[in-house]
Length: 301
Image 1 (tube, rainbow, N blue to C red):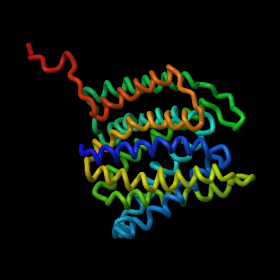
Image 2 (image 1 turned 90 degrees about the vertical axis):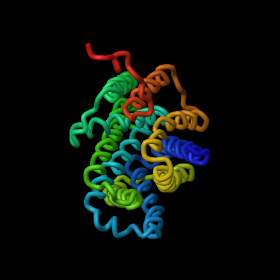
Image 3 (image 1 turned 180 degrees about the vertical axis):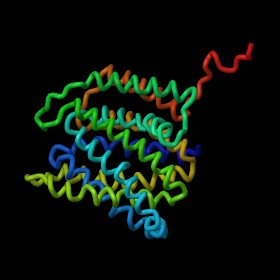
Image 4 (image 1 turned 120 degrees about the vertical axis):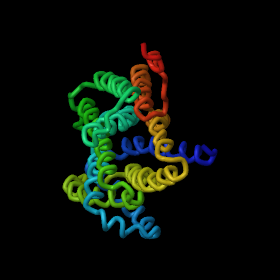
């Protein structure tokens, strides 16, 4: 990997890690529906001119039905879920749950595409979900706080979001292989905007949010969604999808750091240990780390 590509990978991790900070800054004043709706509307406005400049509008028009379904699974539902989670748990914790996306991707590929996991992937699934259960158990309180949300429901929302990401990956592989990535990115944001706009209008905050919350929305839409998509697809073109996917392991570190620096969010030993377990399992599932087990390579007797 060239130094420039490595720098862009770190930049993308920092941007996506910051998305959890901006969610925390905006969710309290906007609420989950308005925050998620404004995010996809802003991202659509940013990405659509890029799509048109690249001449990929025909691809979006040709595959709009499948892209619309992927957009609901990959943007509308997850963004809404993470916006809700931001009311009750730290951005660092949400980002750790977000890192389980490849685990769900393997499960859906197995169930739907008959891509049966073997060896390291099976071990990674078991280890990764053990870390998830550890974290979830530590936050398993369903008593609402002042915002009306609870940490237990926030954890369920995060896992629902990552499950939808995993489903969207199989949907994309099944229906949209070969479709230009910018058509997929832009179309998914547009379809998510169509779904979330009525809900946003219905749940629009009674009190106009302040400048800080509006700034968080702009950063989420333009930087963490619009710019991040362009950067991500650029990395895929330069270093390949599997290497670009390694950004998953860097995001929690940045999310935890941003939350600690700007919001004073605390980090405890349980959170760090469970994060290590989750990332270890995910590294096995994605093939980032490929250990040789003691029973491998032995000659038959």
